[in-house]
Image (cartoon, rainbow over all chains, first blue to last red; front, side):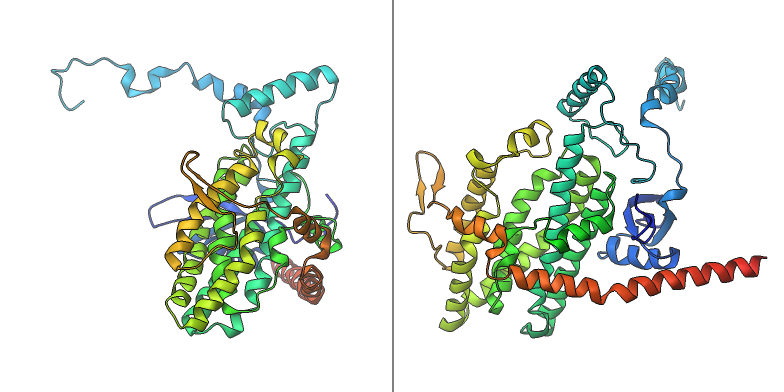
Length: 96
Length: 329
């Protein structure tokens, strides 16, 4: 990438309502974090989409490698005993 | 999370390439979404960068014809609505540039391509807006045609583009309805106001029809884009649907569509309409439309005038960083 005519890139996370998690909404460029919050307000919450905003420099995010997805997630696939429906309980037994 | 650390290793050896290509097409066929860090053919990447950035440029240039009326909107409410709409278009440009950047291109490069004239934007924004009725006609017809094009893009195979389109479509619906409502008010008004609405329809109808792009037989990127599920419907199919939706809306307004050939065909259950003047479309694309030069001059001026602001913001951020570091030391 050319050094560096664009402002740094930030990822934006928005909490839609109290009680919900912040969720990734998109990204934007800003000179610093304070500006990123202001821009996120204008770009991603013009219709009351949020009550709280997180921004983080995209360069600071560490992501798993999609090519490694199988190795990473496959071990969970055969462990069906981790789910409650794995266990057969007689119908006569209540509140379990 | 999107643009960083993208390694663009497209098809190292021909054998690997073929396998990767087959696997890629299988994922597309299974309606899986392709995400930024996934392997993709170089041509898929190039096609998307071209399409998404053109789309972004269109949103940004599209702010100009309507922005022309912000200071002269007939009421305070209409002015507030128009400002909100133009701000939305700017927002849509921002979502789309971000989506394009996930493919490994810088925003600054994309802006350069627009300002140098290397990149295209929708032909429609090179037509003038001489009356208030044009603001109504743009919302009703231009945003209407845009929605018709954009709804299938919500299911585009490329994840970031599809997510941007979901957000955009949610917001465009207000644009179309406010435009139709402007036309409705004019159509209910004095003879002079009705004439203004009719004039605007006369001027925007054919350019709106052309927004769907060349006829299927002349569209050079269509087939591959359909296979990659970037595109879901052909240009002509969407154009037909737009005509079928819009004709009854015009009738409700008591306005007539400027096409002597237009009629409902009962056998085919569709409207038959006149031939599009593709020479006009091609001229506008080449830069010879009524407002191409104005639009580009305005974008270049805005970009140049903003230069010192962009620089000052960077200098301010650096100063704040240095001060924070000094305090911590």
